Image 1 (tube, one colour):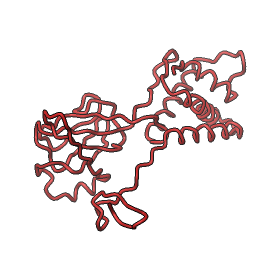
Image 2 (spheres, helix red, strand yellow):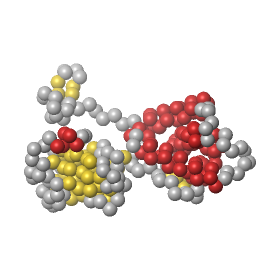
Image 3 (cartoon, helix red, strand yellow):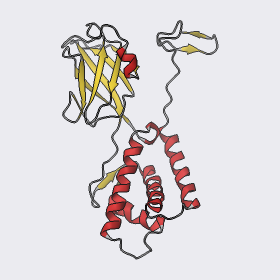
Length: 241
C-alpha cells in the first residue's frame, strides 16, 4: 500500500505531543521529523527481521578477482550492509540449470587466510567487503570468464525519504510501528520524557514485524565441523545426511 510521508509526519508529531490537534507544524518541525524518519529507516535496513523481503542479483563472471557491488558497480544496486546468501550457476545453453550454493566467508581475517586467492576454478565460497559507498565481493576460487553466473541475495532496500509529498510503498503492517518509533524518537529529540503507552505500542508493533518477516533456515553443519561440509544435521540419528 502507499502512504504519504506528510501524513506519517503529521500523525507522529501529534502522537508525540509536539503539536496538538488542528495545530500546523512549522517548517523546522517538518524537517526534523523527516530527518528522524530517514534515520529510522536506515537503522531498520540493517536488521533482517525489519526488512520485508530479499532480492537476488546476478552477473556473469569475467575472470576478475572481485566485483564491485553498489550504485554503478558490477552488481548495480543499492549497496547492501551484508550478503544474506549466494550461489553460482553454470552458464550453459541447456534446458536444465544447475545451481551450487556458496559458503559465506564472514570476516576479512578468514578471507586473508586463503593462501592462493587468485586460483581459478569453480567457486565454493564468497567474501563481501562492505566498503562505502561501493562494496566489493570476492568469489573463491576465482570463476572463469563467461562460463559461470554469480548470484547474491540481499535485503530489499527500504524507501529513502525525499520530501513530504513522497509516497511510501510499504506493506501496511509497517506504517503503525514506523509512526510509533518516529513519535518516540521525536520525544527524545524535543527533550520530552518517554511515554510508556507509546513505548508499549512500539514494542507490540515491532513484534508483529518480527513474526511476519522471520525466516529461519534449516540448521546445517559447518564445513569446519567433523563430517560437516555443509550437510544437513539429523537430530534423530545425531548424524549428518
